[in-house]
Length: 380
Image (cartoon, rainbow, N blue to C red):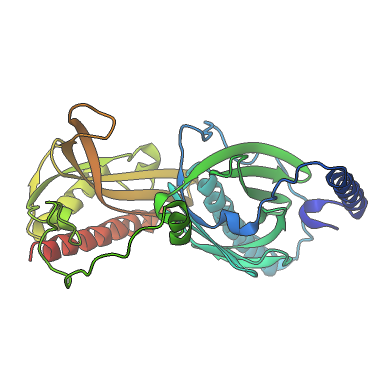
């Protein structure tokens, strides 16, 4: 049996087709066709930011509720009861967590590529490391462990996660034709049938461009003039470039909590309780809170929760410190009002309803502690 339930006969046909295609391409090249550089695995490396305008966000996404996987041989007696209960809970957790990763794509994605290992770090989300070419690799992803099969195909990376019996979630990472965007195609596979599909598009973050590439694109310059030792004072141009300079003088801010819907309430999360806890933590840190205001600098807490059953909750939470300022952009003739992101932290959590709210709130408050510590350091 081949990967993803493909029989050896089908694999032989696919292998033969690839060989035929390779011979045809080689013949075209020998006849004088212009060579086109194939994608390299290292082309996927770097930091990427989600482009929501180019990405798909279907209302329904996941496995079919009517799909019945093959029934395994069942043990007897008390052993059967314990085994079925354990497998059901583990499978349900894995299905929900991996499905929610697709439904709630990360805003940022960092890919590190080495000859043996590919590490993918979503933000927010859980890091995972796969070894392309290795069969049935057990990979830890946040609170769950999944069997994966990954491979390279002409610069495209494919990762198939075994979610449950005969159920897979398959990711394909590739570059677009202009090599400027990362395309992530995700498929829900049940048995041998491909079900829901979705495409997400990421653009390369400016910070991920290598210094060598930047230097190559710029003309040679004269050697820099000697510089004075680092100083804690603002630069002569009037721009304060000290670490966390945007936090200096911050003594008051607003608080906005959003996203807590009916599913969150089922998991013990309440908007009033979250807002009260956040306000208290900020007040204890010495900040003055302006209620019901997002006109000035404000802290924005967004929590999105989904549930598949009464036994499992998954939440994505983001904590962001925003401010507003008027500035003239290179393409505008007069100043415009801008929203600036000063600080941001986010994560993904899953668990039972009895403990889920406490876990999410604990993480949110830990982010606040990190924020307030940076505010204090900036104001020393």
